[in-house]
Image (cartoon, rainbow, N blue to C red; front, side):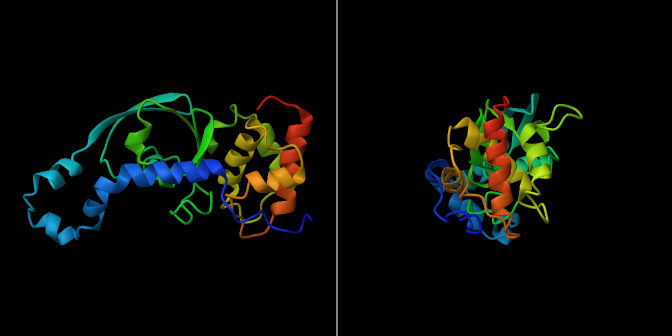
Length: 209
């Protein structure tokens, strides 16, 4: 029934992203947990000093190539928001459970809070700012407006990014399937039925997205 919220189980893509993140971030755990006072006191551990060094990073974000230098521990979410000032991608739970930070990497959706920026070197990133073409909104953005698919709007960028991917993945054939494959995106305002309506309209309209 439409009044039910999306299922709480996470989709496979979110699971894979989390697993890759945990595997590749193990070496940084000790650094992140090290008290700042110790680091400032001149800790001479060469491993810590090396981990703090910024590494070169090249990303194509919304069609623009960026050459950056980042610490290995910086997440893609923080890089987008704090260095590139693309604040449309929201920081919600910061644990990969709410979906507010969803972006596309080479067309596939990921939770940007669960991947280190350095892991995406050379990749093509699309954020909510990159969907529209100038003043022309993306069909999914138009559908969300038409169907009132948001209230406070905080989760909306992640919902839209995930919705576009849901269709491109072939997972928007009926209401139940949409709810299942949008289950990684949480809306505290409860606009789920309208979100489903928006996604199905874009899917059924057959527009290239």
